[in-house]
Image (spheres, rainbow, N blue to C red):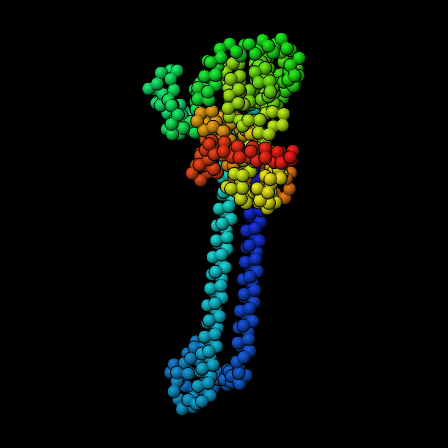
Length: 527
């Protein structure tokens, strides 16, 4: 969204607020008018209810008592008003004036005067209230106008200070920074805060490793895992991944084996069953990344594409039963984004991931391991987020779905998360932080914890959707907004996080459980 659109939206919102205030003012004035009318009617009714004989007496006394026929009184003053005259007459105690009629006239006149005084005071109070309300409304309108003017000034200064957004701007790994999911201000704010975090991170790791030799690493322990969960510096990432995952020991135990696989792949050429598929998927690997986005004519000349091809072909020779899976190109391409990553290191890391981290039969022809992992994930959702499970399974029991091999359709999305280890699902820096934990100590359980955290964050949206099309849209769009990898990983490992106490041993136990149940069902069918 452009700054012009943002300013237009703000102006429209402010205009709507002013209109609402004006409507409230008009409504208040109407209410005051209604109250005035009601009070006037009440006053007329009270005057109408006074006895008629009093009115006649008043008119008669006003006709008879005048300046000529008025009896002598030392308190009489011709310059006084009519009310003062009647008051002085009432105070006189002459025999001719003291009678029962004079007493009634005195009481009625006093009541009329009191009513008029009360009516005047009420009207004065109403006028004062209306004036105060008008003053308050005027001050509120002035404050609103001042706020709008200040916001316009701020927007103008921001437009002057912020340069136009570069659509070709890329991150540190060569990916174009889109503002489709996250606006530019959020990206800039995260970069500033995360750079400070990286500086502190580097200092902490230097203090930790200052007592070790260059090729010596601390043993896995809770203290080291705290450092890993907060991120591994770029300069240490490749070395630590290789060391703690076991890929380094495999490479050292098999020197020159990678080059042997490459020579075999060159001899086979197109006779390799997977060579054509691999060649086709080279162009689909990070087409938006500057390191992999090339023209068709220059494919053979591109260094990164060549490394990607070599690693995939070597693995197809190393593991012929698996050969190649369409997620391998993203896994290897992701590894090659790091500067210190060589072809051989990427090959052994891929081998370690496939054979040591993923479940067995994950990448075979039937891909049974994918279904097993999704069954484990659905069981964790059933146990930890029952409201989401009720929505996904249409209030069916988990064991009923597992027995009939009819898992919810959400597994079509979540299975892609597991096969790619969240590559192209989450922002690139968040994926690196997840892989830090995956390859250094946490193991494959981190994939379940991340998946459960994403689903928990979308619980309200998932429960509101009406069909699976909207559900897939939620689960595809929301993860791309998680640019603050530091905050996200803290949420994953918080004590209130989903499956916080999940262990790799528990994951293996559940995998074996569902694998055995599948085998039993197959045996029952063949009997």
